Length: 228
Image 1 (tube, rainbow, N blue to C red):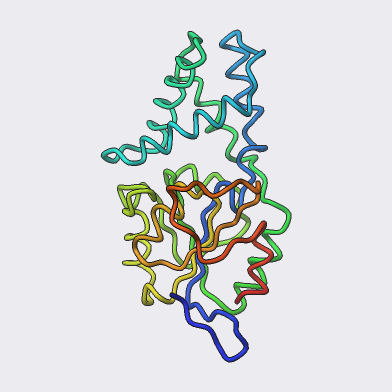
Image 2: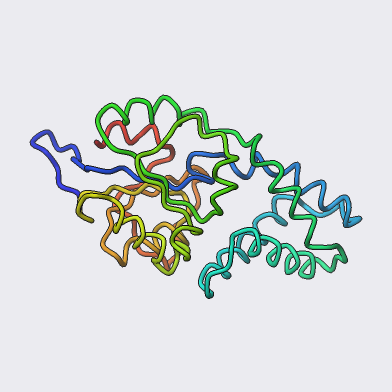
């Protein structure tokens, strides 16, 4: 657990962040790509948001399996989601999603918050992603530590990616504060390892009964400025 100072603020040595959904508005940034896939599947009537969420649920399920690259998982999950909706379309359409990465948008609070935090702390990224897709993502800054699924050869839910972060953090586990939006990857993966976790619950969803409780809950990353 990250310690507090006399003023009650946390004093971490490393602040780590999930990327997609926490720093990047991945849903809004990628809906157009998925609408294009549904159009090619002759299913423009399907709700793109519901389709996207089912696809993401399948991604998370595959994260628990033996490692395969993120792009392969995405294609497999798309095939399964097409099948779930009774659609006949090729999984290769997932390329539309990958092509959209360079135009993904940061949430408005991200840049000023990270700029302020970087003056006092080392910053890290922890992402279930392939390195080339992360490189294509317009994050507008560099980070002191970068932990990706490709480098760790594993994903967050089973702890492999967080173990990679801890091994490369250059500080004790108790000096890391991790912030992420996915209860099913960030909390499920990080809490059993003893990491201090802040849930960035931008969508205001309920905590599932199966998920370990986070140490802190905020609706945005800007609120971290009042914690550390």
